[in-house]
Length: 61
Image (tube, rainbow, N blue to C red; front, side):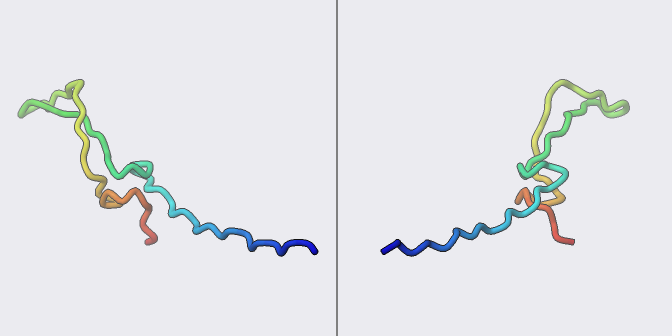
């Protein structure tokens, strides 16, 4: 007698990635110094992505 087939595993659809941070939840910015000209340095700093609030998922709006 043949064995019964198992039902196919159902996957949840993955949410779309945030377009600004590419799904990481963090954005890097160039550090600027100086009061008048705001000279850019070679240093970088990371911050929370304000579009997705760090979740890495695109909003459904």
